[in-house]
Amino acid sequence: MSKKRPLVIGIAGGSCSGKTSVTKSIYEVFRESSVVVIEQDYYYKDQSHMSFSERLKTNYDHPLAFDNDLLIEHIHTLLDRKSIDKPVYDYVQHTRSTEVIPVDPKDVIIIEGILVLEDPRLRNLMDIKLFVDTDPDLRIIRRIERDIKERGRTIDSVIDQYISAVRPMHNTFIEPTKRYADIIIPEGGENEVAIDLMVTKIKTILETTSIL
Image (cartoon, rainbow, N blue to C red):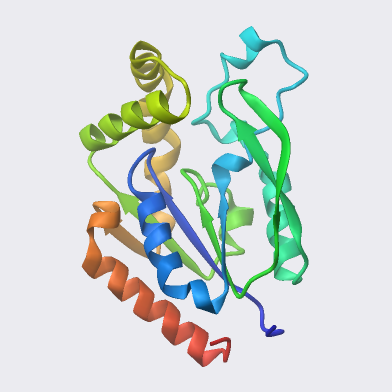
């Protein structure tokens, strides 16, 4: 394995903006070249010390919901070419699971999440910063579909959460981080031109640093 410092890419954007699609598109190209994806929403804080009713009040779109200290510690560990145990979050129980996912160090680290550009400590670790920009109406439709199918939510609870927390948190904390992005990708995974340009840029960096 190369001893060069891994390339760190941050991919931010609103909830259901298409961050995961962009991440997957990049990952598929560089899979052979050793890529690891670290999802910020695996790093929600452990709430096992709280009652279930208290957990239900958690605002998952606020910066304080994330355990960025652990996330940053894990990124530093991967940069040091050491393995980590990535946490798993249980969205049904609203707390961290007892399970973990072993992750080995790779040449490219992608950090993906709604607020990965909000914390300056995270931004300072990134070589490339992306912001996926998608219309709010499309994002809410995607969120309703996802939360019902994957997170055991009802449509009423998803809509209530969107109105009370997701939308105001997006306007307050997520949208402003767009100014930190090196590249803004409209329409997420549907924007093949932007993704192709991003892939070309990554290839150039990796070739220059002799990782590929």
